[in-house]
Structures are given as structure tokens and as C-alpha cells.
Image (tube, rainbow, N blue to C red; front, top):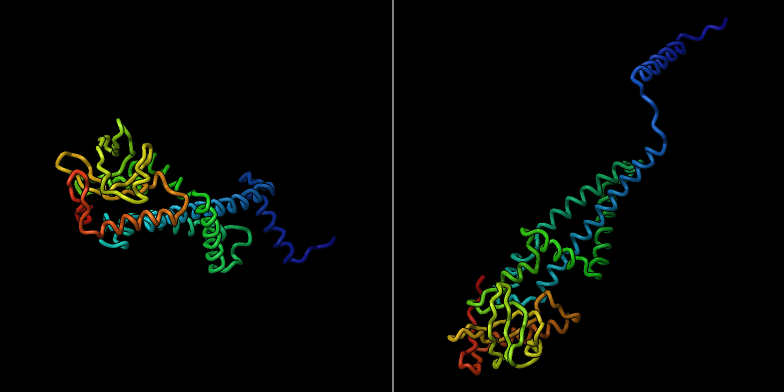
Length: 278
């Protein structure tokens, strides 16, 4: 009769105890595909965090792009002051949080512990930036910003900021859609008021956009008779021009007109604009 060495008997006894404990607790081995699904689910979460991070960057890019072509001289003293008020900073911590989630997810994968932190962080960041460039090209930031503003009343969308800054007729700013009635031009503003326009002081390309159906931003002054004397006009962000250079041309024309001391309209109301007020 062969007798096993004591050390092997000890190992056998430990193994049997472990097996007995597993059987008593009704522990059963998991199928291989459960671990496969868990691993790929983690990768899927990583990919989603990269995608949503790219969306965050595209919305930020859209806000900066809108601000770049904005006529900030009409509402703020400096461009920097304008950007501080209009950029949706909420997306910066959102992007940071999504980047942390992406790094954490990589660490949870089967071989994630082998990758250095700098490699995981840089690859996740570059992935979001690359997708953000694609999203900017297709206008994803514009769509997300507009739709969030439509369904979330507290979200500061660029359209909502635009309305707040430009719906101030007493400060010389008006935003709305141009209408024509009996040969005269009106603007229906965002508050539902219809303003009769005096456009006799407007010459150049900005007068060409004062046609029925156009959404515009107007600089001017309210005359004694309640007529809004237009001193300059630009498209608003709901009706953007496809060519940024042409948009810049509108901006330059109106900005140069702001620097003129006075423009006399047919209604004898001078186009002397008040200083920027918010």
C-alpha cells in the first residue's frame, strides 16, 4: 500500500476542504462568455465616454466659433469679457469627468493594468479630440446646443444667450424675424412685439438681409414715434451664413458704422448708439 508523503496529503486535504466549502455554498463556475461580455462591456463604456467627450468638445468649439464672429462691441467692452459670459463652462467639467471614466474603464480590462497612466490618458484625450473635429465638421455641437436649449429651460444655449443679449430695444439692440406689410418692414421680436423699421440710414450689404423671413440682429435706436431706426443689421445664429468670410464682412461693416459719430435717418432720428449694456 502506497502512502502519500505528508505534504501531499496536506495539500489534498486543503483542496478537499475548499471543494466541500464551495459545494456547501452552492458555488458554480461561470461560463466563459460571461467574462468575455464583461470585458467587452467595459470597452464599450470606454468608447461611449470618448464619444460623449467629443460631443462636449464640439459644443465648446461651437460656442467659441459663434463668439469669434459675434459683434461683441455692441454688448461688451472687450471680446474676452464677452467670451467669459457666453461660453458654456458646464461642458469643461463634463469632459473632464468623461475622461476620468475612460481611464478607469481601461484599467478594468483584462490587460489594462499593463498600460501606463500617461498612455491611457493621452490616447483617450486624442480619441475625443479626433472625434470632436469630425463632429464640428458635421455641426454636431450646433445641434446638441440648440436641442438642449429647447428641452432644458436652465441650459444656457447660444440661442438663448443671443436672445438675452440682443432683445434690449432700449439699449439699441433688437432680435427677431423680418416681416413686410404694405411695403413697410417690421421685425417681430422674441417677446412678440412688432416693430416698424426705419432703414433709411442703412446702406451696404447689411441692408440686403432686411427681407421678409430673415432672422436678424439689429442695432439702432427707438425714435420718439416708437419706430426702430436701424443703424446696422446682421444675421442671427438661427440663420447662419455658410461662408464665414461673408459673415465677417457683415461684422466689419456694422462695426465700422458703430465708430461713426452720427448717421442721420429719414425720420430725423440720429443713429447715435448707446454704450454697451447688458
